[in-house]
Amino acid sequence: MIYGYAGKVLRVDLTSGRVSTEPLDESMAREWLGGRGFVAKKLWDEVTAGTEPFSPENKLIMAAGPLTGTLLPSSGKLHSGCLSPASGGYGDSNMGGHFAAELKYAGYDMIIIEGRAGLPSILVIDDDKVEIRGAGDIWGKGCIASEVELKRKLGDDFQIAVVGPAAERLVRFACISHDFGRQSGRAGVGAVMGYKNLKAIAVRGSKAIPLKDPALALKKGEELFEAVFAKPGYKEWTPYGTAGVTDWVNEVGAFPTRNFKSGYFNGYKGIDGQALRDRIRITDKGCFCCPIPCGKYSTGVVGGKRFFVEGPEYETIAMIGGDLMLPTIEEVAYANSVCDDLGLDSISAGSVAAFAIECYENGIISKEDIGRHVQFGDVDSAVYLFEQMAYRRGIGDLLAEGVKRAADRLGRGAERFAIHVKGLEVTGYEPRNAAAMLLSYMTADIGAHHNRSWAITYDIAKGRLSTEGKAEWVIQLQHTRPLFDTLGICRLPWVEIGFETKWYEEIFPVITGLDYSWEQLLNISERIWNLTRCISIRHIPGFGRKDDMPPVRFVEEPIPDGPTAGGHLTMEDAQKLLDDYYRLRGWDSNGHPTREKLQQLGLDFVKI
Image (cartoon, rainbow, N blue to C red; front, side, top):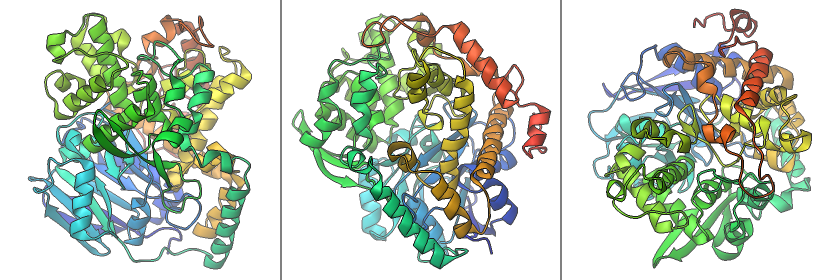
């Protein structure tokens, strides 16, 4: 018996309609832990070189972790991965809610979805009973309506993961939605699910998770909850959730504004956490077993239309509010609700819309191309562009490809306005005056994403433009933060209220029986990081240093206003950061792990 795990893998071949189970290999659990580790190892083992993201041979893998569903604080995380439609290489995304715990209660640690269904389908998992059913009645519907309909048909106790119209049309930044507002948003995992003609997955479970020491696990779990509640930051965090960081990010000059032309938005008070709480919030909402509910159910009226939405979270406030310069929290939340129902990653959607508007301002895209006048600060422009993208109408067919591909096709200087790394749009932190944060975006394995290494506070503490010591800190964060994704728990207690990692080190052997130190767990996280790099090397021709380059705007255009006006890092700084990073990682000058490094990490099977 493998403690902490459900013990089975569910394999679904949509082409043949065959469903099978296989035991979870004990060495897989010991060496890769779960979540992100399972995703990476299965993608390496089962997806061969030359596979296209939009092909039956690409696999969508969903995995919980050993701590998922064990009644520890914030233990409800699911990790989904595939070859990314955004980058062509390794892609994954993490989602909260209740799906992951329910999957383990149904008896599965992982779902491997392969092939492609001939007709729109849903996968229904009810403990040991697994069926592929038709989805013709909800194909074409939005995420919210689809989830409502499936719960009406199957029962409220089913947990649903669903895709919307954007995924059905293969928008490269389409997401998977769950629980009316949680998303696997990044890297286009929803687009792969849509390509496979899989509209939804519904799961219900009634089984127990075997624990090494159930009585001690209960006792330690109670201690963990008490420790969370005792943290000084607990009462400050809960009322606002992630939206509460808006003021701080703006005040330090890191708030994306007008397609990252600036890091400061004069109108930030109209869209910050206080505005959310005072004007649109109905109630707080937490994911599975979460004592610090960051979700905010909200409602309001914009243009005579009533909206309901979970959020907005900070990233949406940044990329739809600041980057598109919307002046009110109501408008941000309304645009957020549109993205949620269409199944668009609100980070990428905001960035793509900002790119389109700046191209329009500079004459690269005409009014005839777009179909109407669009401008920053106008919610109707934002919603119009979101709908065009999701349905691939007119210019939306180009924008649905993401800013990198759209800029490559448009030419005429559009590349300067395409804010991305590896084809993935940059998230909500302006890094031109933050060397570690810039390096974090440059080297994140799926493309520009803060969740791998949120290093901007280190820049502020150690000198924003200094490159010294920054690579070492980024690497440390890139092992620590993704480890939470591997264990199947949320990192926000650690990030936001200072919950010590010693608690996880103490509880891990109580759950699993594996007496791993925190350092040993970090070593496994490093192994996973190197494997995800090798997956991209395998699948993207010529992948290497050139793919770690920052957007041109970040190294050539000084910030025009705000507290960091006038400064920026140069391309020479970026190259030095990469040199330091590759050296410390044990990679060659092209960013490829050396044979010695692979052997050191137990990755002898990797050939690149």
